[in-house]
Image (cartoon, rainbow, N blue to C red; front, side, top):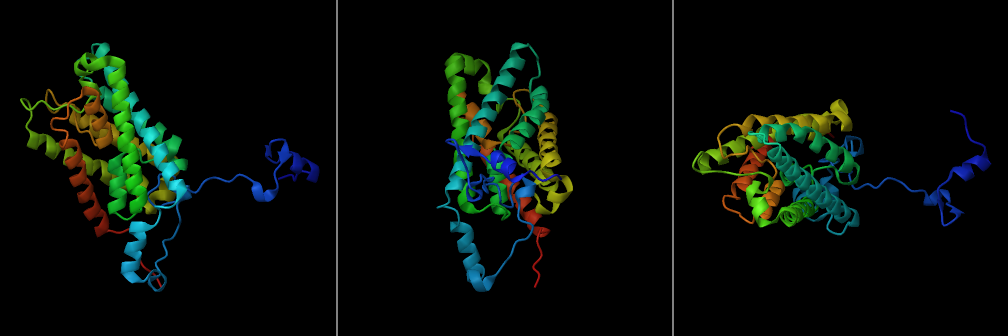
Length: 307
């Protein structure tokens, strides 16, 4: 590569308030996405170093896992980005369902499942460098229980994602009003117990969530796969998995829109409707599915202690 003359190098430096910056003031990418549960695979550390003599053994490691990060400003900013992304995704998801309904398409959910492929992939690409690209409390919670995301980051992310979903629900209700949101069912996550029982819906949510997580870890979140699929193909494969599972569960019964697999999204639609009956299904189901995936993942851990 041809080297620029010294005067051209000076001219190429970033300028702020008309003054060239010294090399020590160059802007560098933020390190907010540098954790093992990130979709930004090239920003992950390649090794996890465990040093009991420094961290005070297992108890010290557990303490660090529970406390490290509460005072890190970048994590709070990343949580804010997660909230904005969650709000935007839930809002667009509801509008897609409502638009399909206005096209008089009799079965909306399968089409919505296909659009999830584009929707989720684009959002992961957009925010992965800033936050890791979770967007979904289910993903964040599972990376916490598998040890890929620290507790402080995870709690802040889930709070931001849920608040973002609630804001999206409020916006939807503001646009369409109480009557309109009831007509369009708030955008999704609907259960008619005359057609399918609560127990059946819960079991569908658990298994669908587990399958989504099992594949998502295999193609995008497991650090062992970071070099194989990378930050480009991984998010696309995760989005395809969500679309496929959504499509597969959408036609199970009338009055059931399929597996939600995103508690914040279902919460957004409940806020829009102003009705929270059976809302717990879309929280408990993903929780149990996440714990199942955690058990499977712990059975074949990604790291082996050396030295």
